[in-house]
Image 1 (cartoon, rainbow, N blue to C red):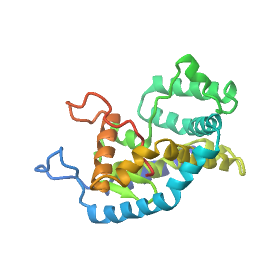
Image 2 (image 1 turned 180 degrees about the horizontal axis):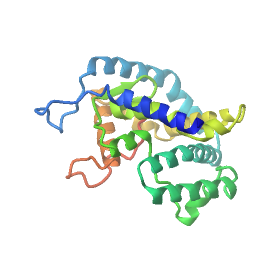
Image 3 (image 1 turned 90 degrees about the horizontal axis):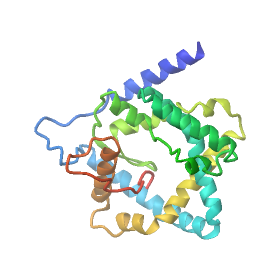
Length: 250
């Protein structure tokens, strides 16, 4: 009974969020970013840059300088493993049963042989993660991406993906099964993994945020091209992933 109520609440939440998505007119070129909220987005971008300069950038540099690389890798693996049940839920919602089985096997192997996910044992058997999120689920269900938005602290997104981020907060079964203080381990690991990414890819991120003529437009282009490639919505001439860097949160 509780599960059915939960599913209904998630469905209502998702429908409520995506119903507010705006759509470009028929005359709008798909090659031009649909950004009717640009004025507000630029304020969020300025805020995100300020937070990055004051907090994330120095913390990321300190993290990779102080924490040994094997420990960084273990934290990243642990964070990724804890997010897998939520990924499996989205695999299921998208009707991709093969990916459900693949990620379930990966989670079981990494949790046991990989000692809670600290080690990526499943990759040794070429059992890689089939990534998925609720933004992708909405795309599979036929929801259009809507306008581009830049979220405070969370970074670049679209209206569809922003709705997906909200729903993803509730779709990981582990969040309902693990009690505190253990429930905070995943959050701490996620923060550590993000700091590791900020430190590892620091030069590339700095070139986007602080060295480009218009960092907002540059980040918008990178995000939209990368995300559309991930979802199979890229233009036909795009044959390879143009930007493998994950810019979420920066």
